[in-house]
Length: 78
Image (tube, rainbow, N blue to C red):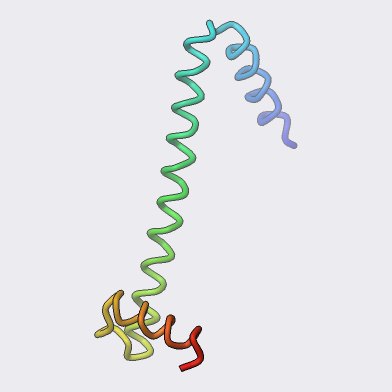
């Protein structure tokens, strides 16, 4: 780990330790929000990839219901 990162982490920990418990809960909520936003970005990137793949393969006309039916039929062995 780089020295700059270690210093930043230590600074964050020191500040966290000084916060009252209510502020710590608020900080935890904010961190969870940031994590969920990162996860949502990942899903957006996946969706974009899937749309581009469907266009490339000529499946762009299929709806989500079509895809769901196709997958269900495949799993059922039809």
